[in-house]
Image (cartoon, rainbow, N blue to C red; front, top):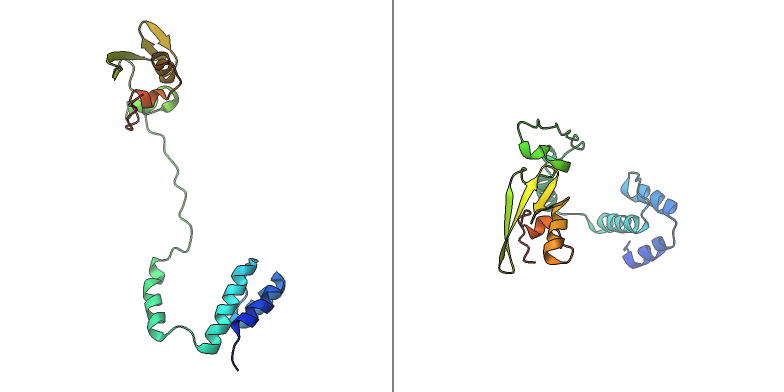
Length: 165
């Protein structure tokens, strides 16, 4: 008996998902939880063709077993790691406002060349000082300098990405 794969696939396209699941169990010898119609059709067609014409060669099966060494397969999902809080003494940058590690310690003076001028901004415990005025964020300082909104961390090159504005 010759298998006409095109005819079989056309017949399976007209089947419902429940009918395909029954056919899958019949052809493959095991049930499935899948309700994806195209996946079921492809698997059934492959199995029917493998049964009719022979499956993979012994060499291919052996190579597949080597690649899928059971010892390397994970059976369960990895356990979720719980982050332990770092003491403030061990990492002083973590204790900064909002916990942002990009923010330098209070007292640090940020220096930036911009349009031929050297800018100096002092980091305060509650904000930033530029030209005698206090600002709540680096973005506010950068906006005052450039005249347009820009990311303060990027402008002062605290992200490691540059920022030529």
